[in-house]
Image (cartoon, rainbow, N blue to C red; front, top):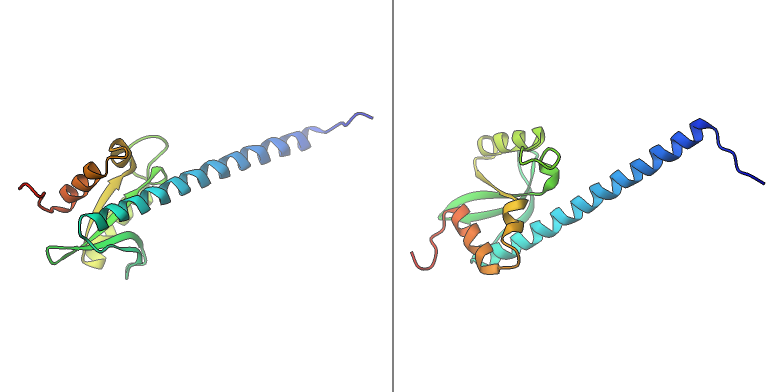
Length: 143
């Protein structure tokens, strides 16, 4: 007995497969972004800061980490691939809006850790800590 499908069924299978593949890629991007955020939080601890992670701000935005540096509150956003258009380094509209709105509404500075900068540092914990110190305006031990 042969199975015969009409054109609409074949299109439906194709769409479902494509949708499933897209969802899997989005899930993978989200999981990778979460891993980077956790590693960044760990590095913040290692440079002597006490990050508060996944903080819901008064503006309604959720911030990856909040730290106190030199009596100043700084929001640290770890921007994974989903914060950028395609494979470019151009931020999405929602990322741009968040960067513009958080500082004046919540009264804090916001710094971004783009995933490609973080990934470029590899597994070198000292380089990651130095990168965060520089980004946050902290003095490095030999300065």
